[in-house]
Length: 196
Ligand SMILES: O=C(O)CCC(=O)C(=O)O
Ligand SMILES: [Fe+2]
Image (cartoon, rainbow, N blue to C red; front, side, top):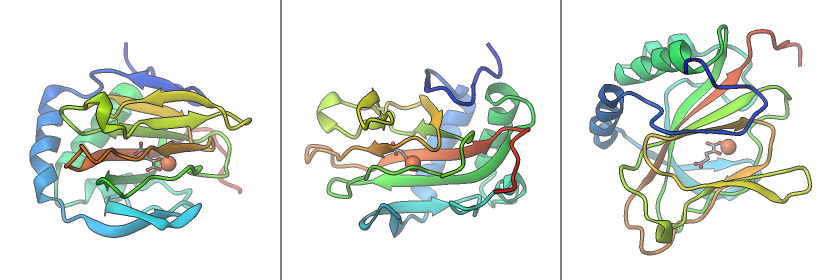
């Protein structure tokens, strides 16, 4: 089914990306110059690894697709085009586009991605293999701060959820010796007012 991503829903899309795009992403990952120190305003002390592609911050309401397409590594434009053509509803705007990575000890923290209602976050997981004992789930909370979704970061799945809902990447266990990598795209629907 095409363009089945729905704003306002929590959705987990399996085998989300075609194998050509996925394998190019995997071969690109070792070339990424990660920088350490990214954090979420809800806890500036909880820092982790980050690689910026779209250069849109939390307050951004403008489409950053052109910046993604201008990135020197062409795979990000390929992912973006696939995403817009096959997953996102017509007219979707791309507000943010980046990669994050966590190692053991660099805990995620509960946060919202925006205060503006109607936007959506899509997390593509980029670890080939994931074992339950490694932890690192993404959890999503409801308004009563109860967990309503908990998803293991298995490669080639996209978790899509309303960007103003509280969520967190959970800590990794000491057994996990690698990088837990995600490519995150934040979206606004075609008809969303950008007045706020
Ligand atoms: O890594 C995750 O599971 C979630 C990422 C996230 O919440 C974010 O980048 O805003
Ligand atoms: Fe987030």
